[in-house]
Length: 236
Image: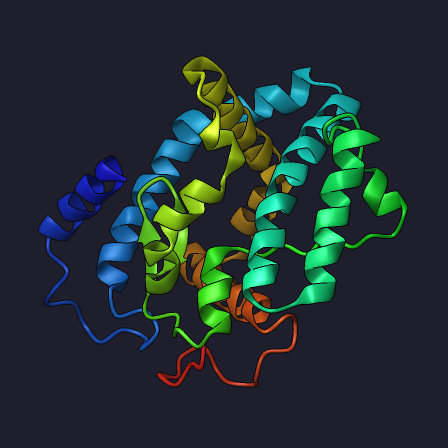
């Protein structure tokens, strides 16, 4: 978090206070675009090549097992946030997923719960804050972490505690888990990134609008109020 804060301050120091008029949901567009270009550079130089190699040399069943394992870890945090949002049925279903996949599914490597038609409910602390009426605030692009909002950025310290991989005491194991999770996630979006390069005239605006619409839908459980993204009045 200290490194992230330092990077943010460094980008802000380059100057974005006297920027032209931007979309109301994105008043820091000048700053955000600088961070976006930085993230793209890092991705092209490091993360994307590693993800491509991982996808090429790792058999699909192994990649599926890795994805299932980290999905099982995230189900624990989703269950906690479902409980904080007073969603008892969703909470019970998430806990049942963890129980079944952690036992019958060999610590989550096999997703038995989905085969039993137990739906995965992805919830995080930013969504919990939105559920209780905390507005999303301006759109932000964070160094290395990518698209976010002021509300989601404020929830990062809690989100970090909710990531079970980060709670592993053995440092080499913890770092290996975090690196594997990052590479696996990037590998799953390789084809989407290629299509984005082909379709989007302004990738920054496309990513921003899709992200904001997605987060709004997640907070409202797939049924958000109809309101354009460029309006100031965003209930969550």
